[in-house]
Image 1 (tube, one colour):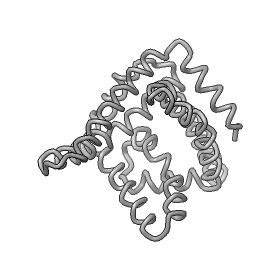
Image 2 (cartoon, one colour):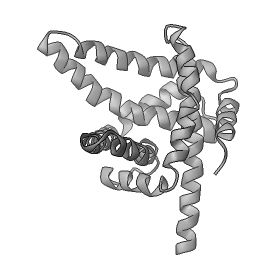
Image 3 (tube, one colour):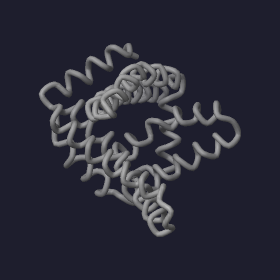
Length: 210
């Protein structure tokens, strides 16, 4: 496994010259998420229901889409982030929504036991959005199971990688969160680089075992 700085450097290299499409894709994703959150806070039951609908039917598939888009940028230099994000999200909408919903339910169930087990499982399931797009032949359960196998021994690695962005998130608050339009694709692309690493390691182990 590479160091956190390696993943960050790889992300910055992929984003160099591609910040505009990355920011636009992030803006679209965040706008939808914010709209859903605002609807959930309304007093009208109809608007609250609409908020839940947007969250489940749009935001969840978009989670798969944005990770797939930054991975395509990182792995192949494809800078059509917004197009790829929506294309992946809704090109296999039922599969993506089902996988993300199941992952959320599993995480919530573990969190009901204790916060720490819930966090551990959240990091165990973290590669699921990538796998849902990378291996569409797998069921939602199979994608989650594969994520757990890939993340065996690497949950702390991902936790530390994500924790390394905390300072930037705090600074982003002073920009009224506008800075997050650049920070989110930076972090997500670093996680895409991490996925490529854990995937390669897992597949190498499978070949040795075979």
